[in-house]
Amino acid sequence: MSENHNIIISQKEISNKIEILAKKINSDYFGKTLDIICLSNSALFYTIDIIKQLTITTRLHSAYYIF
Image 1 (cartoon, helix red, strand yellow):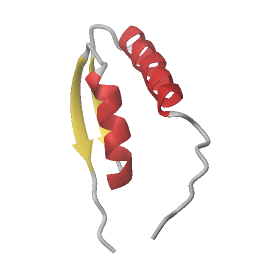
Image 2 (image 1 turned 90 degrees about the vertical axis):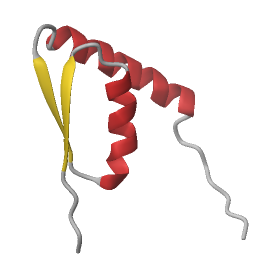
Image 3 (image 1 turned 120 degrees about the horizontal axis):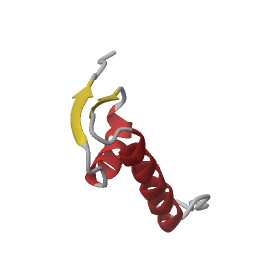
Image 4 (image 1 turned 180 degrees about the horizontal axis):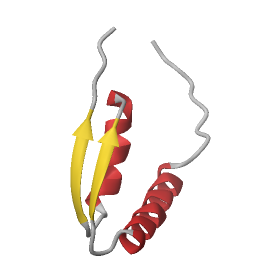
Protein backbone atom coordinates (compact mmCIF):
# COMPACT_ATOMS: atom_id res chain seq x y z
CA MET A 1 0.00 0.00 0.00
CA SER A 2 1.45 3.33 -1.04
CA GLU A 3 0.95 6.43 1.08
CA ASN A 4 1.59 10.00 0.05
CA HIS A 5 2.88 12.34 2.73
CA ASN A 6 3.41 16.06 2.56
CA ILE A 7 6.55 17.02 4.45
CA ILE A 8 5.81 20.14 6.47
CA ILE A 9 9.16 20.48 8.25
CA SER A 10 12.31 18.91 6.85
CA GLN A 11 14.62 16.72 8.89
CA LYS A 12 17.30 19.41 8.55
CA GLU A 13 14.98 22.05 10.03
CA ILE A 14 14.11 19.79 12.95
CA SER A 15 17.80 19.05 13.56
CA ASN A 16 18.60 22.77 13.53
CA LYS A 17 15.85 23.54 16.05
CA ILE A 18 17.02 20.70 18.31
CA GLU A 19 20.57 22.07 18.17
CA ILE A 20 19.37 25.58 19.08
CA LEU A 21 17.27 24.23 21.95
CA ALA A 22 20.16 22.10 23.29
CA LYS A 23 22.52 25.11 23.24
CA LYS A 24 19.96 27.19 25.15
CA ILE A 25 19.46 24.43 27.74
CA ASN A 26 23.24 24.00 28.12
CA SER A 27 23.58 27.74 28.73
CA ASP A 28 20.62 28.08 31.10
CA TYR A 29 21.47 25.02 33.22
CA PHE A 30 25.28 25.19 33.17
CA GLY A 31 26.66 23.72 36.39
CA LYS A 32 23.35 22.12 37.33
CA THR A 33 21.77 18.70 36.94
CA LEU A 34 18.69 18.69 34.74
CA ASP A 35 15.89 16.20 35.31
CA ILE A 36 14.14 15.46 32.02
CA ILE A 37 10.72 13.85 32.11
CA CYS A 38 9.35 12.22 28.97
CA LEU A 39 5.62 11.62 29.25
CA SER A 40 4.93 10.00 25.90
CA ASN A 41 6.41 7.01 24.09
CA SER A 42 6.38 8.90 20.81
CA ALA A 43 8.25 11.87 22.33
CA LEU A 44 11.11 9.64 23.46
CA PHE A 45 12.98 9.84 20.13
CA TYR A 46 12.80 13.64 20.13
CA THR A 47 13.89 13.74 23.78
CA ILE A 48 16.87 11.49 23.09
CA ASP A 49 17.92 13.67 20.15
CA ILE A 50 18.05 16.67 22.49
CA ILE A 51 19.86 14.77 25.27
CA LYS A 52 22.57 13.66 22.81
CA GLN A 53 23.53 17.30 22.33
CA LEU A 54 23.49 18.29 25.98
CA THR A 55 26.80 18.77 27.78
CA ILE A 56 25.29 19.19 31.23
CA THR A 57 24.47 16.40 33.66
CA THR A 58 21.01 14.97 33.00
CA ARG A 59 18.70 12.37 34.45
CA LEU A 60 15.99 10.96 32.19
CA HIS A 61 12.67 9.88 33.67
CA SER A 62 9.82 8.44 31.67
CA ALA A 63 6.21 7.64 32.35
CA TYR A 64 4.24 5.21 30.27
CA TYR A 65 0.51 4.94 30.47
CA ILE A 66 -1.29 1.83 29.34
CA PHE A 67 -4.96 2.29 28.57
